[in-house]
Image (tube, rainbow, N blue to C red):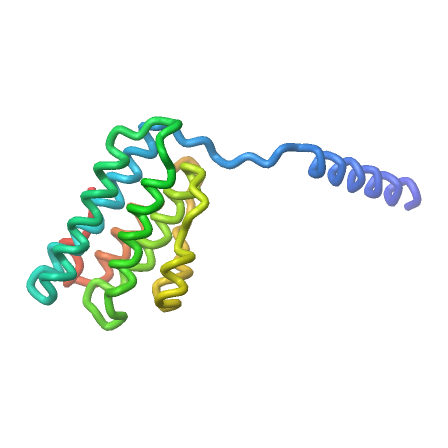
Length: 178
């Protein structure tokens, strides 16, 4: 028993030293992945803008403009581009999404869009997230979780969560993204 205890202690000590000295790194995203992620988020937001067009044309127009801005900034993304500009566009999109009432038909998709934007910002190393949005309207849209499946990239995880939510409500079927 003493040998086992000594072995466990040694393994724990080794693990703590390794954890303290190993650098923490996030998943590395290529420029093409960042561009594709931005496109997926923009297409998703454009799909809910189309649904919202008849109920709230002003919101739909604002959402369309913000989504197209995000897409334009990510379409030719290259490492070294200004993360502040992309973070500002993402924050603008989040502010518009935050204005969507919880009772709206498209409301179930809003938290997923928020989470995807946060992932995009984290992947480019942006320091700006929903801080300003949470101050404006702390609320119901925050805290969505996008389940990760091993072997699937962030965009695939986002699309799977988005499409599952869209398909769960027949009125949101048109919001499914490819």
